[in-house]
Amino acid sequence: MSENVRLTSLAHGGGCGCKLAPAVLQDIISRVPAAAAFPDLLVGTETSDDAAVWRLNDTQALVATTDFFMPVVDDPFDFGRIAATNALSDVYAMGGAPIFALAIVGMPVNTLDADTIGRILAGGASVCAEAGVPVAGGHSIDSVEPIYGLVALGLVHPDKVLTNKGGRAGDVLILTKPLGVGVLSAAFKQERLDPAGYAALIDSTTKLNVLGRRLPDVAGVHAVTDVTGFGLIGHALEMAGGAGLTAELDVAAPPLLDGVEALVTAGVRTGASGRNWASYGAKVTDATGVPDWRRDLLTDPQTSGGLLIAVAPEAADRLMDLARADGFGRAAVVGRLVAGPPGVRLV
Image (cartoon, rainbow, N blue to C red; front, side, top):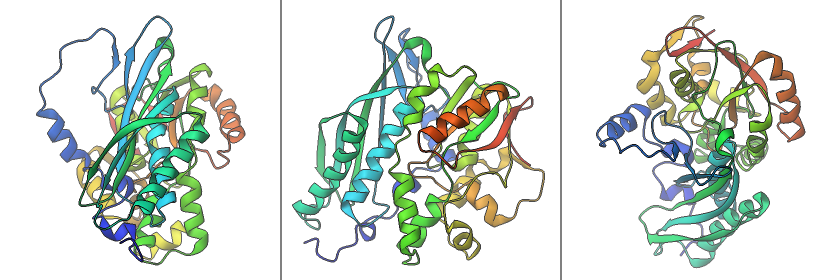
């Protein structure tokens, strides 16, 4: 059944580019009745944070999240690895350490054979093993399009939970992974991605954001989120909104994955990039006249992207050292938080 079938040909989108556009998602959420107050719910839906957090006792809080999507690559093992890395990232972004995961599986069983589906699950399990956690169960359905992801659970001290809303005026913004995953994945679907570009795509999307679990003990770290489907601007907007500040982004500062600039200037980009800009462009001030191609990189959906960290200036060098020690050698300062109305200013 699976012979010569490209996984990406079975899905209308791939990776975090499958996400609903930010404006659409916000409209849907606004129609859901507000939940009653729960004193042990430390983080809920208020600021579109990366995971929910529930206090268990005085020293432990449960971090709970789920993330799943359709294939961004054709190799089933790589697809599983990418999806699992992406799901675990939300635990790390809250300062937590994962403890176990549950698999979410939707597969077109009349199109994909058991071996292919098994390799997807094996890829996810390999990443969980790298993170030191089991895949302890899950749920599967027969689906029109292939879908895979995880429910990821972790623990964090209730007093050390990191959120996307704690940023302070003057904080430096550090991004731990280069941008361009969406561009590379679009090039892959168009059969325009060379082996070096594919290697860059896999290396980035399967690198666990383990730095996150160290951040609660770093003095000066005030807010964290991971950059995924809404692009750097979209997740910076969430951080700025939670803090009631303006996020200034240096448009030339974010590092790019190898080959991305050439591809995007040649017209390769995702539809999600345009949908992102249509959703939140009105909240962005362009102070410099950013070229369209560079703006597209700032809205590019990042499947399993890096962490965006708001940190006091005096702690930035130490944080950069920690990032490099954890293998994030291209971490970079990409902006800062300043007093002003919630929004993003491109400089």
